[in-house]
Length: 538
Image 1 (cartoon, rainbow, N blue to C red):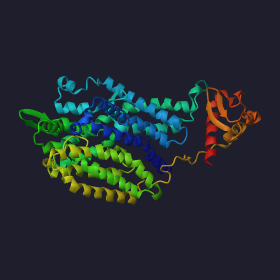
Image 2 (image 1 turned 90 degrees about the vertical axis):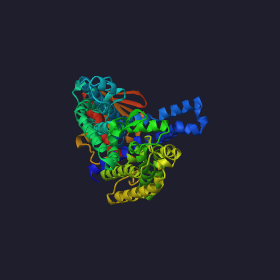
Image 3 (image 1 turned 60 degrees about the vertical axis):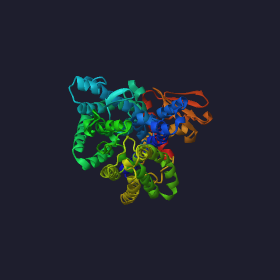
Image 4 (image 1 turned 45 degrees about the vertical axis):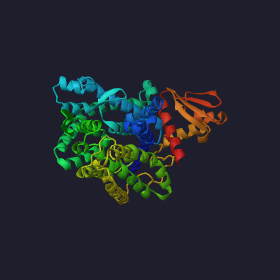
């Protein structure tokens, strides 16, 4: 198997770490949100209890943990899944690198005069002279991540940091600095170089990201002027850019600016699709289908019918012995998407490993917006799960045309299922459950890791001198010593260790051995690590 294919598979598997947490928490987020929904509380008055609402509020806050920190989770999980040795160092470097990237980006934004205060909608309108649409678009470009004001790069920023963290770890893990700096050599150097490199990456992204935002804004203007095709284009664009986080810009633009519609209702001028809909809902007025075409009604076919079909396709295409585990893996995400329309736990398992599935998913999402608009469906809100279908569709009467989904839903289910099954089979897409190693915790050893013969002899003397591979519990080093924890100090053979010409051998207790190498320690530590790793893999 080529190194590229192996690395690509490892990348795909690494994404399952944050996705698992995301899907699990999404269930609690969805249930708590439903039980705090005013329409549900109106039907079930006992939910008004203050203590119960406080508990539900806490659950929502806790369940939102992965959603607010998803980029950081990706920055950490990618090294965890892709690196075979010293995982903890790579994960740490990924996190440090991501934070450094944010700091680099934030610092340059500050130099440019862009801060939380100077990018508010009010400031941009009052001081910069932008109109509401322009100000909202400008404001949507920014966010605060880990308390740092930056461009909203969402999970793409985390993925960049994670992949570069892997690269920097593999390249610099064995770096040997000048003897005066030997404390910072080897594994300790990895997070240092990650911080330096990723801060520069953040600065570079500050120049690149506005170009991406400009493209999204131009697309939004095109959508608003394109009629029904624009509705399809809205759904397609929102889904295709979802991993970048830029879909929030598109959503906010149509929900709160003139691109989503302007209507004068009872003397009140309302701007934006969501504001129009909520005013009509609050005042028991007929719903504007021009507004709702950009809201929840466009997501129901995709989320309530399409995503379950996607899971079924992945389940059927998995190895027979893996199918039960595949079903268990997706159960939480499936519950979340049906209840509240949170698709990431399912979509993130395939869009990063298959461009074809990513594009097909976006096309179907566009159709999910187009079909309800064609049949004058009038269902608002923003989530798109079955709760929105019931609360803002069925409970609002037949005028919403909610029953269209009873016909279109099964058709969409079949579209997704047969399309995904064909693509996964035809292009051998390694979705969850199609690899022999899926759901196994066994380590994979990298091919080609060898120890040069001269170093091999040194490493062999050290390992055997420490009582052999099975006697070694842990190997570490300080600025001058190889620090080793052993099971039985009686098995340590000083005569073998002395063949490596140490400056001294110290035994603080029966289970600890310090072999002093001075400025040679970084090289000694690396060749011992390589030798032990190679021996375990053989």
